Length: 348
Ligand SMILES: O=c1[nH]cnc2c1ncn2[C@H]1C[C@H](O)[C@@H](CO)O1
Ligand SMILES: [Zn+2]
Image 1 (cartoon, rainbow, N blue to C red):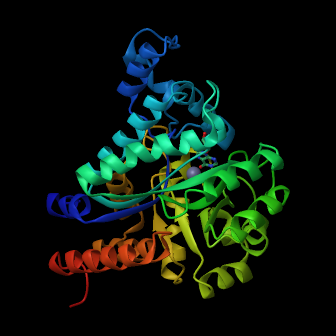
Image 2 (image 1 turned 180 degrees about the horizontal axis):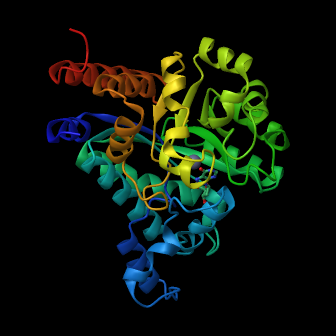
């Protein structure tokens, strides 16, 4: 790949719909937060920390992948740490020319030192709002319910999130261990979210089969699907997803690491795209997956032969499917189109 193309991939305005806060903490920040909070790191030499925070391509499963969140989560139990990592994540994305991002996190994982769900959301918002003001990257939040958490607790999370509608929270998600906890357990939770008017995206068809995608759309009101790798197993559902403009938030590096796919070349993203399904490219987790949006684009271009214009198209899918409120969404869509036109990525 030539330097000119690499430059376009880096410089083109990008939208990121699927990125977890706790999986995207800078390793240096982990070290600094561990010191501040008096936490013992598993190793003394910071250079040896990487295997504790990063899932390599040798990672064997989603379960192993999820074990990499333990350490960052221990460091994310205070107001200041939440504000700081939220700010730094927007800063990192900004450096990668991300102009719109939806950051997701699960409040129930940040309550070990007594913060309430409302406080946790407020502290993350303080960081993203400050970053948006200083850097200009439009940032919104998606609140996650974990599959392994009881329904009554998740209902409380939805209730707390609903108070932040119009103040930075734009949607709800279901994440965690898909093998042990199928989506139907949480129907009531997402019924409630839907009643509050919160848009919904669900992790599905990542570590378990296409039925979970079907269930998430049909009964959990998902307008978008996190990953959706197993959609390829069900032709009728695939057609339905295409016709109804359900958007897939695909995260290729993560999908290789969790073994949702065997390898990069086995990833179905290009096949979906060519069939007219609205796929988007995302990182999932900057630190756990050891990636950036530009790196994902580079590998997709090398291995699946995507063109720069096709990346532009997927970014427009992402913005259209974003949970951003309307005047701002239109402004960003116009901005992206103008930039792409100037860069020669759209037909004039
Ligand atoms: O790709 C994923 N699939 C399922 N769950 C995930 C993935 N990436 C992160 N998570 C979980 C682990 C985090 O602690 C949690 C909240 O961000 O969400
Ligand atoms: Zn995810």
